[in-house]
Length: 379
Figure 1 (cartoon, helix red, strand yellow):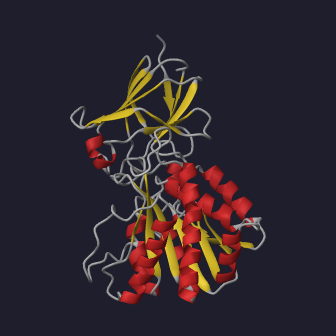
Figure 2 (figure 1 turned 180 degrees about the vertical axis):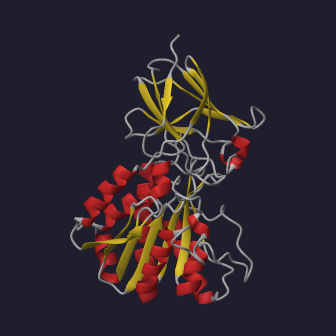
Figure 3 (figure 1 turned 30 degrees about the vertical axis):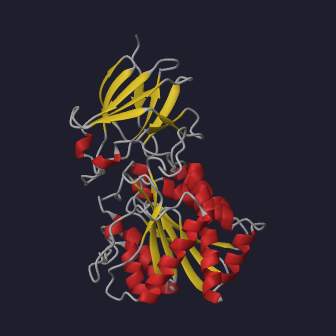
């Protein structure tokens, strides 16, 4: 029986091949460069048409989030457009934690990933299409350590300064799928929600805060191993030029409302994290966050408030994190949106789990909730 072939020599590729025996392979995840974070994988299997493939990813108890593997099914695609889920199981006691993926490709090539990838080529298509839309201005905020552009799109004629930014953690690719949905909505001249928002808001949108980590196949860090969402208090050109550029641009515009878009490895739900615990906390500022959260919960069954992160005690917020820092620095209503790598347990989809399509639809719900939130503040 001929061996399958496995390769990763493409945008966001990440896997190490330990051994291959026919249609069975033992694999391991490569750590982010200059970092101990490891969780993202993306690889191609060829030579397996009609054969059941067994892929064992080992040493996962030393991964960044071991609690992310139980109940998780790997993403798989044969056309790189539609991403389904491949049956997967996790045994924490086998080879220091083993995820076993089984799948029978209909064609000779199949791609497997931790979540449906959002390539840098697709990112450039997104930027090109959006920046060519009426009323949209492109702004290059700066340059990454690998020499890539940090792209920002601006639109809207209103006074409310709204910042939307995603993929500080590059492996959280659902965040840029969300951005694609948001931009499709906001640039649609026939969309009534978008028209109303563009009248009230000035949007500043950074679809990918970490292009270097995205292309390198990192989970959480940039080209030199910096976790960008721990750099906001003292960003530097040497370690975190991405955060430095975004924060400088925020200083120019001010921030009234901010959403930092992410994915969570372990919690099988969509939720928001706020800025409780910042030194300058006021009930009025906090009520802005809580009211938005309530509106979003009412608007979509994909969002819930029962599951999420622990709330910081007064005065204990970590100001190196963007949501806390932006809320403290600007007095903004800031929040972190988290989507699952697994499925949404409250509304499961056995075929796709949480998916690019649902990420995009959630973006429009978030924007519609923003409009309702603004209208409530105006009344």
